[in-house]
Structures are given as structure tokens and as C-alpha cells.
Length: 482
Ligand code: F0G
Image (cartoon, rainbow, N blue to C red):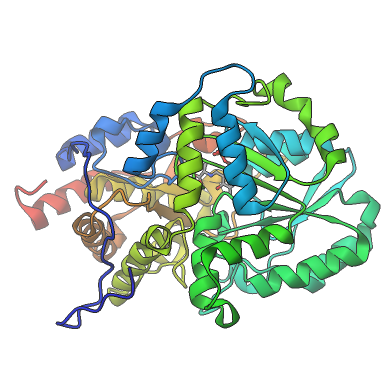
């Protein structure tokens, strides 16, 4: 993708695929957008797709599938046990990761449930570069505690550190020494670290982690859900790895992992999940949980059609043309927004473009959810749906007080090979307009606040009539335009 130069010198990412199936989009009027976000309680999770123009909520289960993936679905074998589809997927995983055992599960959090249920005991501590919401919930449910040991730079929103997902070895050693290795069932390393902006770890950092864990005999569990972005960044940003193939980098990472699990809603561009490892003892510990919670050992709750598509998707993940599309589109979006002074997380990561709501809307206190307000405003401004990643996504403290998030981000995910560059340009245009008019945006307050997972189901209202004013300004600036 990046190897093609334009005669005019223009620098834009060029798609190395063509679109052969399309879905019609609808862009409602700005007046309807205001209505829709009000109906949704200002929570973008509660919007209906019919009201959305560009759905940038997530890249989970919504990446475009290839012709070969769709074709493979036709050969799926529905047998309850011993399905040929299982063998095909297991063989592909073995070929790529070099692990003997494969336990299937219906998605990433189901793998986390199995791993936590089988390996985490009350009082255990699980260090990780950074948590993801679902894994933290499962470890806590099993009586364990999560300790984050990401490098300090990981939490700096604007940075030129190319590997913000790296683990701070000193922090990790301290957690091990303070708690004792026997309390640590495993260290979890997340590829393409989601909640800090899709930021990668370097292969060198992983080698250093492995050496430290070996000192204490601690297992390394890799969350490979966002591995495809991390592979791209290792190849393009880590000098010593530039001559390695994607397959070689993948194998180097796998060889240092005792257990690898993944959401195939991301890795493999279909819908499902799985856990791979070599150790027979681990198989004994985990295997029985699969038929209990997921399905028989040869499908694990997945549709066999999806399993076929995952096997092909995994093979396609070894292709730079395929895995570069997301990061290059995101980099383009980040660069263009920076040119217009819009505060974004840098360097550009995988997964999506992250707006820094704390700087975008400095006049909104965290108690009025700046990232949530930005998500609602972004939808009104352009019919673009993003995901709040800030205080709304936190849970209140036991005493009922707010736990203010370290970062207030609006994540605009970039589903792979789904949007065209002109659609991305449209999103940039509406963000720039919103930034010019940022003083019009006000905060939100809860009107219905569930005790758990409030970001999924909670309903909020604007603290003033700022949304009507924003619509009026849109009409004044854009006239009859949608
Ligand atoms: N691990 C990571 C790093 C993830 O990003 C996700 C999901 C999971 C595990 C859980 O996988 O959804 O298949 O159960 N991330 C989605 C997102 C939800 O929108 O970022 P799952």
C-alpha cells in the first residue's frame, strides 16, 4: 500500500482491494439527528443503524470480508463433533502460531471467561500492560486483581513514542516482588492496546518481558485480538524487524507466549474466538469449560461458517496489503486533523482515530462527561457514530462518587476496508467544523444510570439547550446540506 508513489506528490493511502458488495447508507437531516440522539438518551450505543451514516463505533465484527472468506463459508461442515471445519481452522492456527492445542469460543470475552475461571483464584494478581474492560471484569469476578504496568508514556495523549503499549519492566518486577510469583497465574500482554488508543508493543519489549517472567516462572498470555495492527507497527516502526516477514514476526511473538487468545471479531475479520497453547496440563484445566459454557470442543459456540471465514481471514492477516489498510487510513485521519489543530491521540495507532475530549472541550468538567458530550455532538454534526472512552465508561466508586478516567477520548474506529477515503474526508470535515464551534458544545448528565455497564444502557440529557444551538449553527453554516 505505502510502496506506491503519486506523480503529483500527494500522500494518500491507496486501497489495494476493490469493492464488490455494497450496502446503501442513509444520512438523516441534522434535525433528525438531534431527534435520534435524544431518543437514544445521548448514548451512541442506543442509536439505530438506520440513523447512522458512518458507523465508527467499533471494528469488532464489522470489518469487510474478502471474496475468499465468503467463498469458504460454503464448504462449512455442520457436524456437531469432529467437523472438518474445525480441523481446517485448527490447522491454520497451528501453522501460524505453532501451538498444539486450540479451544474454540464464541468471542474474545468468552476466552477471557475460560482463562479466568480456569487459572485465576481469589487473591491472585494479574499484571498486564493495560486492562481491557471485559478481561478485567472476568478476573475480578474470579476474585483476582488487575495491575497495570504500561510505560508512563502510554498514558501521554500527545507523544512521539512509537510503542506506547510497551510494558515498564520496573513496574512489572515490583508487582511480582510485592505479591510473590505464586500469586500471579499469568502476565497478560495486549497487542494493539485498545483503551490507550490502539497503541502497539515492540518485539524487543516482549523479549524483555519474557526474560523477566522466566526469572520467576510466570506464564505469558497474549491477547491477540488487535495483533494485526501490532504486526504492522512492528514491521514498519521497529528497525531490527524491518526485514522480517509478517509471518516471522507473528511466530516470534507466538513463541514467547504460553497462551494466545483472540477475538475473531477483530483478528481474522469474522465473528468468533479461540485460545491456543502447547501445554497439556493447561488443556486439562481449561478444556471442560468449553462444552460447559460455549459448545462442543469442535465449534465452541461459533457458527461453522464463521470458523471457515476465520481460517481464511487469519491467512490474509499475513499480507501487508491487508493489515496496512487500517493503520494507514487512521494515520491519514490523524494527520489531517492535526493540521487543523484538532487534539488527537498521537502517534496514530491501530483500531481507530481517538479525539482527546479533555482538550477539545476544556470548558466541560469531567463530572459532565466531555467524551460523552463529544460523541453526541459528533453524531449531530455528521451522523458519525463514535464510542465514548472516558469517565462514562468507568464505574462509580463504592461510595457512589465518580471515578474520573485518566483520559477522556472519543474513539472513531476504522473498520478495515469498509470506508472509502472520501468518507473519511467527510468525517474529518465535520470534526473540523465541530472543533471550530466547540464552545457551543455543553455537558451531559445522567437521567437513567444503571449500576453496572452504565455506558451500554445509561441514558443522559444535555445540561442546557446546547444541542439546539448546535443544530441552528449547522443550518447557518451548511444551508440545505445534509
Ligand atoms: N480484547 C480486546 C483487546 C478487545 O478489544 C476486545 C473487544 C476483547 C478482548 C473482547 O472481545 O468483543 O469478541 O468479546 N473489543 C471490542 C471493541 C468490543 O469495540 O473494542 P469480544
